[in-house]
Image 1 (cartoon, rainbow, N blue to C red):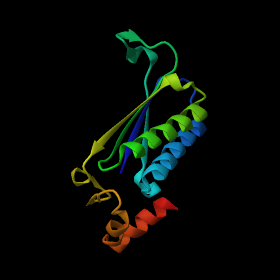
Image 2 (image 1 turned 180 degrees about the vertical axis):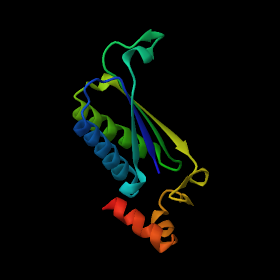
Image 3 (image 1 turned 45 degrees about the vertical axis):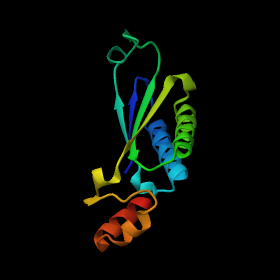
Length: 146
């Protein structure tokens, strides 16, 4: 599952805006990779401006830093599309200029990830992976994807 940690120094980012960002990241990941939506996890962390530094100086203004851990095997084009879609979704939802959004994507081999109690499949092998899961796990994941 890709895990996107969104670190914010933006004050007043409402629950609705966070929901829009999480939905946008999920939609971007699904669109760029074809993976089911339930694979995308988004975690928000808010920091005080005095705890966020750029160039050794306290940050002035808003900043949103997104670090996505995704399964290795995506093409450079897929990752570029993914980041472009995330950037658009975040700037729209948070009403911040693009210069305030930083996005880093890190590849992790699927064999180094356990989620939902199972080692993850390689990209493109999700359908076979799902079919091989116990029925209870398939129902649980189907509920997440609806």
